Amino acid sequence: MLEWPIRYAWKAYVPHKGTEGSNPSLSAANLKAKMNSKAYLAIFVFILWSLFSGWVYVCKIKGICFVEVENVMDQSSNGISFKLGESNPVISPNFENYKSSVLTKLDVSNKLRITGIYSAIEVNSSGFENLGTARAIATQSLFDEISQDRFEIFSREEELDTSKENVQGIELAIITKNDFVEETAFGAILHPELDNDSLIPKIDAYLTYIAIEYSSSELSIVGHTDDNGLEGENFTIGLNKANKIMDALIAKGMDPQNLNPSSKGATEPIATNATEDGRKENRRVELLIN
Image (cartoon, rainbow, N blue to C red; front, side, top):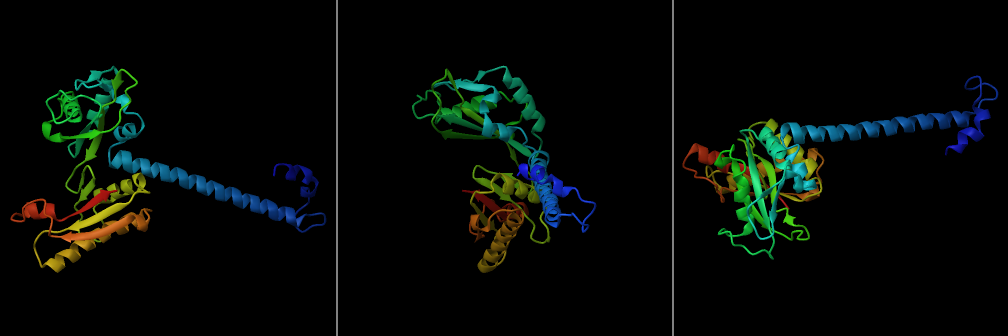
């Protein structure tokens, strides 16, 4: 491709298009090259815009720029490790900076999820159900600036790298929790308002995050209602809620084949239906990430 202009450069020297000695085929080739350049530039600009918009939603709106990225890439940067078979954390100099970052990002609408990890080959002498729970509780005590109700404690069994003196037995993540979005261990609970044509901004922003972060994942979208109304009506309302969330995810680029909307109506309440607050809790859509 690079030799062509050099070999035929003499044909490009023409007074102007249409005069004697001009080369129409070369002019067409130049025009095509310019158009291709513009197309490549447009694609490049679109990629940059997509990356930037994804960063805005994940970092600025969801507020988890650093923690979940570290979860994916290298949890060792949190400065916490454990000796094999023990639950007392070993703290490195990295921890204070990591802790400061966590406290900066954590606001009143978020929680700190601590997942303790343990291996089946480890002997549990902690007094807890497993070493993962013991490690999570011990790590929680390192964040005494945070009130107890702001933590979520989980444990998980997996193979750990035992070739080193210490094992990375902990994961931390800031979890979104507000009046409209509550992240869970399996996905999230949403509280959309069907009366509005458009979704609440916080829900819309969270769905954008889901569409970016889980673009190739399969999602079950389950609508729920309170017990007001007939069974069939509640089923339809729940399905309408699920379809509304599905349509928003499709508009944000998710594959419809990966989305499975359904309804439970009023059959699975998570709160009492005797109060307005309880009924509001039951009117929800669950996102289950498979």
